[in-house]
Length: 460
Image 1 (cartoon, rainbow, N blue to C red):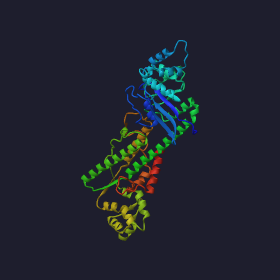
Image 2: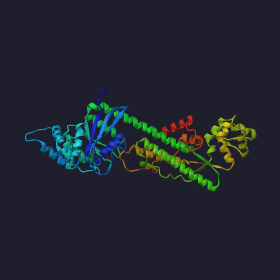
Image 3: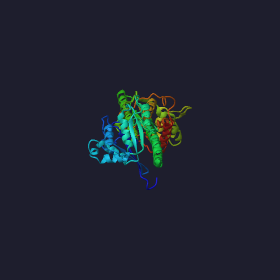
Image 4: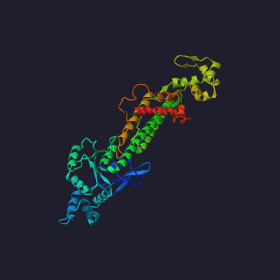
């Protein structure tokens, strides 16, 4: 676009309560734009929004009041002509806008017409659930008088009772053959692209601006997907690495399980809220609800293969060296076994670095404590629920009013087979979890595992 080029101006017009403001919310990804309700005539004035790419304004969108009485307005326009006059549409409208009726009886219609006359084109929004009535034909005839290109937008086409075939036929009879389907509550994935491509056919001079908008929105969609996958990966790593060391006393065990349940639920809710913010929705638009965490997980993750691998690296300077001073170390094909005496010797003689990483956990084993961690089934459920939420956000328009329910989905992805390797490794690294004391979230290895898990989530 050259320096002298101006933003393309679009007036969003149509009957009352057909979803004009809803369309603007979705196109601008702004849930706070205007007011959306089921009451007619909600918008009483013209309101605008601007879309820019790299700081350069490319498109200005103007929300307008609903047309309420096009039948009477069309009759009035016809009476404005003097006998023998042959005024064209814009000249007839200019006479109307100078008349007192444009400030009184037809004040709302006058606002719409002034904005369309000042714009490059108009988007005529249609509630595709409504029957094709005479008032809509009159509206289109009045709007056509402005001499501006009109692109009909069929809204609410995802509804089971839409009348799309009837509207297509009626629009064709009026000479409007180019139209676009765009449900502002549940827009199709390529809805914005198709809308701008259709506009480019009507406004060839603005094709470059519209193509830049299309490319930018595709780039934004890709970036949101990448960021969303990372948020979910962070959640899963946090939960996989989370652990609580507790006494085997029944009361203390139950209290620890309850606290862990609460911590995981709160962590998932933070992920939900971060995803909502990333996609431009409000915190109240979705809730994580309750997780069926069962009774937690009582496991021996202290001796899982990843932990053993780390211990093996420290031979000569860590636990193995200390254990050799006090007792034998039995190396078996499947892992490492240490008797109680060997554990004591290992901790006493081990290097400080090793003792910091494993000493407290090993001593806990000696004292009869157990480690509470998150079961694989809960990790699977967390991944499934967040993927379901992500899918819902990708298909949700910013005018949607209903809350998203994040329930257990039915698809089999993540239900079977091994968990991703990143989560298996995370179990051996409690310092990778923000839910544990002394977390070290900036460790390079943790960042690598989060990145690897993000790619797995994006590929599914």
